[in-house]
Image (cartoon, rainbow, N blue to C red):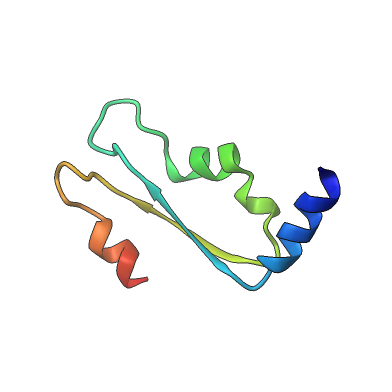
Length: 68
């Protein structure tokens, strides 16, 4: 199982990662820093990534994320 994970990681090295941090209209929503830490994004050194704070109900952040 570990070998598969490493191989998959190698195949994704040049990919970009878009994270939608949804529910930002809700009290207690995770901050971008909290999402980064929870997902371990700072360890992804070979990959470009970003987080967009979104609220699907309000339609906020979705277009900006897709345009990225």
